[in-house]
Structures are given as C-alpha cells and as structure tokens.
Length: 237
Ligand code: GLP
Image (cartoon, rainbow, N blue to C red; front, side, top):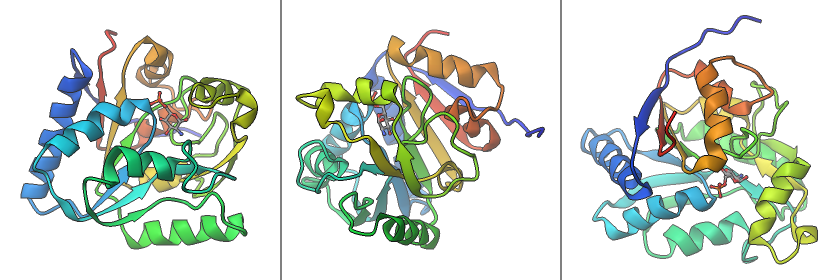
C-alpha cells in the first residue's frame, strides 16, 4: 500500500521548560480563537514539565474536556501506578476541567469498556492530542505491529515496554502485561497532534519518524499520514 506522506513540523528546544512554554502558547492561541474544546492527554515522565507549567499558568480548562490515551488493565484507579492516579496527582487535583475521561482498566467487561470509550471519543472530536513516544516507537500503548486502522482496544505490552515501564514499579513482576489504549485511527482523528520527545532514549523513535517510511513496525510513523503534527524535542538530529 502506498500511503501519502505529510510533513511534520519540528520544534527544536533547548530544554523541557522551553517545550512547555511552546505548548502553553499553542494552547493560549487555540483558546483565544475559540477552538479548544477537547484535548487528548498523555501520561509518562515526558508530560511532567508540561503539566507543571499548566498548573503554574492562568490557563483555564474549565470549559475543556480531556480524554486520556490509555490505562493499564487490572489496576484500580487509586493504584499509584495507574494512569488515572497519575493524572489526578499531576494535573487534575489542581486544574479543574469540564470533564475528564480515562479508560477504566479495572472494568469487568473490558471489551465493552473499549467500545464505550471509543464511542465517547467519537462524540467529542479531539482538538489537540498530546503524545509521548515509547523507546520502540509506540504511541499510547499501540505497540509495533498495531494496524493503523485500530480503534480503542486491548493491547499486549511488549517485553521491552514492560522492562522500560518497570522503573515506576517496585518489581517488574508487578507491571501489567496488557493495557487498554486508544487505537492509531482514534489518535489520528485529532485535528492537531503535538508529540513531545526528550532525551537520547527517544532518538531512535524520532529517527524512524524522520526517515519518512510509514510502517506498522514503528507506530510513530503513522503520524506521517496526518496533516497537522508538531514534534517538540530537545534531540539534535
Ligand atoms: C507509556 C505510555 C505512553 C508514553 C510512554 C513514554 O508507555 N503508554 O503514552 O508516551 O510511556 O513514557 P515516558 O514519557 O515516561 O518516556
């Protein structure tokens, strides 16, 4: 299949703080033009400085609905390593939103929960989707090999993702092996996508994107099909 490739915009920053300033300016512009109704939010350490800057800013999200990308399966929302807990701890406790949605990884019927979440997403078209990236090029929990037409689904985490993410757990055995995640098609429906990548750990994934070959081997390359993607990075290419 020949896929049409679009150009991504690269914003090179000297620091995470500079990246946060850039993000804040984009949000302010979008809000000023009345176009910011729904944001897609990410978890992971990449987002720490971004959410910190939102907390310190006078930006109001009281009219904004937020959807998170993913959640581990099997962790209750008060589990310290759940993404629900992360969002509460990093942002929601001090920055009120109109509504916030996170997949329920502890749902009894996880397939029904995937369908429910995807339906909610369709009812709230995303204006800006924030993304981090995994070292293997995954976006949300869309691991290598995930079809680009995927919607919200259950994903098996790769051994390398489990290993990388184990740094947040006491023991690698405690890292869930599955997660519920927006699919690649769900993510690509956003009007605008901003991906953040800091540090050498992310060089491989960003290089794959910049090589320009669209392949399910590197989910990040799906972004080359979207017409409004900005990569904010401190990596020198
Ligand atoms: C997890 C999340 C991704 C995130 C990635 C990178 O796997 N599911 O959404 O982008 O981690 O995490 P970090 O920002 O900590 O490097």
